[in-house]
Length: 95
Image (tube, rainbow, N blue to C red; front, side):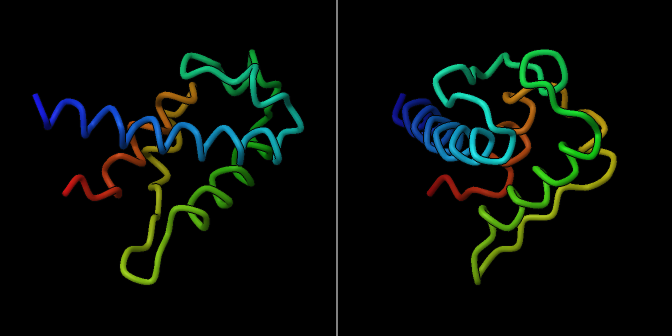
């Protein structure tokens, strides 16, 4: 039970941070960004926008102790905000 709550908290934190980055980078309203939002269909991002966003996300979520590097294969699988949250969860410690 505690583990489930912790995972939900970590995911919420990732989502909130991502929403700010996405809104700033893509120029969309933060309140319009949902986990199910499609980068191309809902947020009007093209492949160049997505590449720039991924670079910003990697930098924002990296620390001196852990570097976030999303593989090209993983990037190809990202279609929604939730896809990116799920990938980032792999880098965030769940103590």
